[in-house]
Length: 501
Image 1 (cartoon, rainbow, N blue to C red):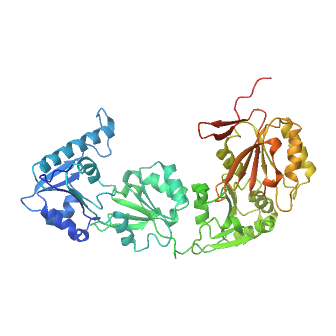
Image 2 (image 1 turned 45 degrees about the vertical axis):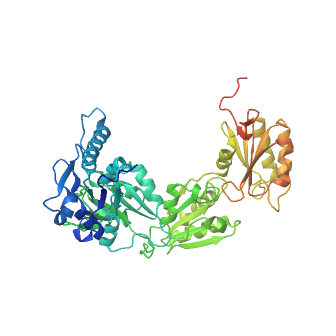
Image 3 (image 1 turned 180 degrees about the horizontal axis):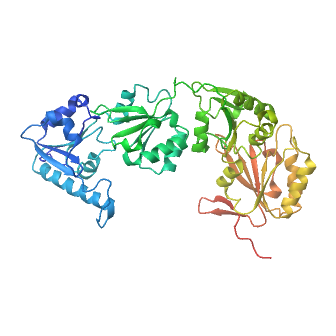
């Protein structure tokens, strides 16, 4: 319970640096305070104090909260984190003593108190005991966008804010998959941050802002900045792509074949997201294109599912004219999907110089297996039951070979409106090698609105319950099908250890 006889705690956001960007409420709170506290490094100079200096009175009690360490090492028994935790506890105790004495305390914070600010460490230790008010301030993110004079986010774009202290690979993945971004806390992290922008393919878009609204402000292209010149108070910005000029077609077009996974955005990898966003043309089966967000300035070329070679040739022709093309495929593009079609056409002489990349996606088999448990935990074979591109005799021969080898089977394309008998034929063939009790997972529309995953005995597999959106996983002799707990949850798994002969 907060004691109304004690003083009040203010967390005062001062904005990005220009004193004119302080809010009226921030100025009023400083005027109401008996104690003004601010953080600084050991050199004692506080940016927060300098911003609020004209509002400080001679009768203000000032509490300088000096960090024992910033980026250097420490011999504290708890290491760097331990040294900071001890400092926060002692600093909070100093402020608590003033509050207990009935004094009002204003803790100054650059930017916004709750946005990567030092104030929050005081707030977490004191706000449950004392009357508290947090006064928001203009963040460095908003200031940077304003000083660049370019929109930060627009419409349905997503803004990602990242600390530059993240590992470079993590930064790369995040930058590749987002629309717009701001990377904070540069300084010594700048070389890794720049490397992440380059590795994610976003360096050409990136801007740099140093000491926004302060004396010594600097802006520019991130690629042109000397790493040795970058202070902590700087940010890297990926502005809005809406209305941003896309690169004109050039002689350096390329094709990337991407897998969208079995369903919607949850199944996309960061690398795939980045490739889809960077392309100026998308090519694919219309159903799969519909999974990709619409972006301004990006052409979309949809087509029927049965024109893979034509689609691949169209994409390569676009690339030959200088476009960056993403060919959109469901699942993994290399598993019964578009990667083969694109590479087959790309191997022709007229397309031999066009760069082609394939980015993996979550396969239907892996998605179905994960929903069922772990039926693919040991050796398995993947076979398509479609006889549109190969004769049924070949399919039957491969089913017999895989079944006699006691492999788990992932069966793609089991049936459609025009193919109604293949599932029954495959079941009967497999029963020649497998027990009737062999578990079969029927996974339909995994990840979609009509998802259905259930398990039946091989002998009970009904072809009428299988369509083109269904994937079948047929267990081996070692695959287990159990029900766990009171809920009777069904789990299918194949042991990794195979019994000795």
